[in-house]
Length: 419
Ligand code: EPU
Image (cartoon, rainbow, N blue to C red; front, side, top):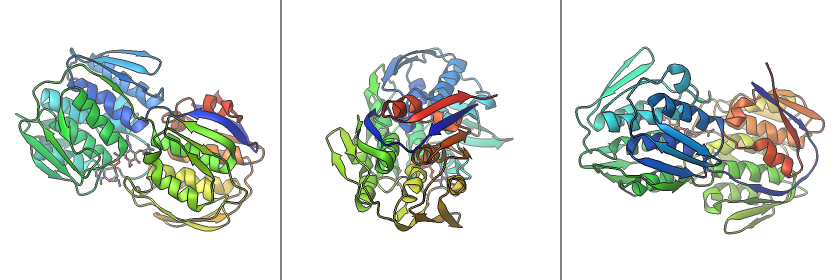
């Protein structure tokens, strides 16, 4: 267990380099078990979610080596063993082993995955898709047994453009007999990155990044080299932070197109930005304007930036409204922000009002999930005095070297282990 300690109130400046995308990397690593040759993935973020996936791969008998941001995975000799619940519960993305192991062995037994408590997080769309491909799903005591004599291409329409279901179904369909069409597919940049990885291995996937993905099944996948796309949620988090507290902060190694929805909102709020080909330079303005945000699937405003944005809206003049349409339980950070002096009001589980600007003061607060934690880090940097963020392990799940990156731009921030 860790806590983060921040002495807030000073402006930040300098450069922050964005790491590889968490939500891409956590799918690419399980996808490697589809290949019975060694694959190399670069720009993998050093976060605890990747450590948990590494643990699962090792449990299955894969050979894994990690050197800085490069991971080499040889899954040629893996066994289709049950992943212990205590490991699969560590993260949501353990569910990608369902699609990958089903594809490889035509059978998989897995416990319900873990992840941040931000809603019920059912996996019915994944299971319905596996069934459409010819699998049988049995559920017993929090465990799923999924079997298939063979997997056959099918037309699958997702009721909701789920990121997890889209990726899991690409993994399951990649070696299925015939053609699979996933319609109403998710379009997030990590979907494209996973499809590119599979294509680098010899898969035949087209349409990733649009709402219809076509997968023509192949018999064999081969060794390849692949690079994780820059993390647009990490990018957005540092952009939000810079909008509140920075002078000429340069956020580099970014794909500005991926944060278009955020750029548009920060523009409305009066944040001066210089958008380069692969960097964004931001200074906080003298006065921030209020605005409203509604979370949507990509390319709409990302739910994963909603909580960090709530902290920024606290600094804006006037009343802002946040509508969360993806998750049912993603406003717990507001209670912690209120302890620090923010004025926020939860109207329903999907809608909150933020009144600003508010002076924030350092307090002991609790990170209830990953992005709530990011929201509190930003609040701690803005606040006067000392902020202590308990349950900081949530933050370490998704932000590589956050302490080092922020220290380098002038933040007084440290991480301490607690009993
Ligand atoms: N949903 C269903 N049934 C399903 C799947 C999803 O009803 O079978 C619902 C969910 O309950 C939710 C909505 O559909 O209301 C969206 O779920 P989605 O499947 O898109 O989310 P996910 O794959 O579980 C990923 C990210 C989340 C991110 C969402 C939305 C990973 C490991 N997680 O979750 O990331 O919020 O997509 O973009 O990729 C985070 O990084 O902090 C995080 C929570």
